[in-house]
Amino acid sequence: MKARYKYRIYPNHIQITRINQLFGCCRYVWNQSLAHCNQLYADSHKKPSYVDLTKQFITQAKRELVWLKEVASTPLQQSLKDLDQAYKNFFNSCTGKPKGIKVKPP
Image (cartoon, rainbow, N blue to C red):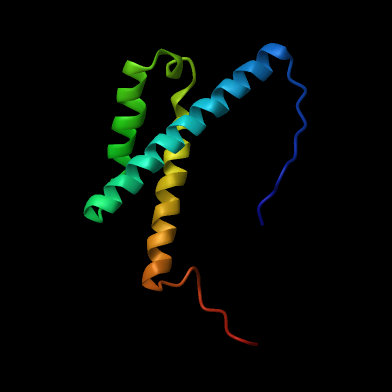
């Protein structure tokens, strides 16, 4: 059994600004990488790996975009991992692979 905790936070104005900035950067990385994946799939029916996406949309983008350097890289990496998992789930559903163990009636 896994425990779950629910926390309520009361951020001040500076923290709200930083949180909004972080969410905006994650949204930017997600949208840019999704557009790149869709374009690559439309052109060559290939999906880029997580490592390729990380190099292009985090490492290289932080060199070019100053405002992307201001946030931590961990949430940006997690957004790319979520995108990679979403693509894997999509392709597995297209091939008919089961999502989990087979449930039999008792």
